[in-house]
Every structure is written in C-alpha cells, then in structure tokens.
Image (cartoon, rainbow, N blue to C red; front, side):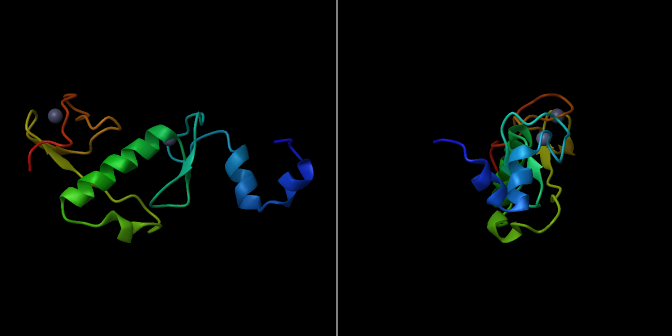
Length: 109
Ligand SMILES: [Zn+2]
Ligand SMILES: [Zn+2]
C-alpha cells in the first residue's frame, strides 16, 4: 500500500503517537514490536507484553478473571510461590523466578 501523508496526519493523535513512539512506556527499551498494555494505556514492548500474559495466566490460575481488569490503570502485582527459594516472587517474562531462574509458572496447582 502506498503511503499517503495526508492519511497519516488525518489519523488521531493517539494513533500517531502509537506508531511514532520509539521506546517502551514501561521499561524504556527501544520498541522492536509494540502493543498496548492490557491493564493501562501504555504502549509497551513485546517483553513487557509477555510479562502481562504471564500475569494474566497467573490470575486465571488464582481464579481471577483478567478480562475484568482490562484498563484498570495499573499493573496488579501477582506473585507465585517458588519452591526452589521458598519465596513468593513475580516471574520474569519467561515465567522464571527472578531469584533462582527456576521456571515457576505452570507448575502443578
Ligand atoms: Zn517494555
Ligand atoms: Zn526461585
């Protein structure tokens, strides 16, 4: 499709910002892909988006429906128990414990 600057400037400012934004609102990294946060208005990178996906999965496991949390304006803190360190931790974007690197999401309930 041929790019038409008129069309571009005709779109809403928020959309322009979305496509022109260079860094992630959350972690500040350069955006290599982008999406809007499930919980906030932020434009976030794919790494942060993966963390949100894990968070949503954990919420479901805890019997909370993440759909009801869409656009609440903040990121809910959601910790899971790591049997390796014996602590409740917030898993990283791969679902691993930030302390010991052990995979903590998806373990038996
Ligand atoms: Zn990010
Ligand atoms: Zn751990």
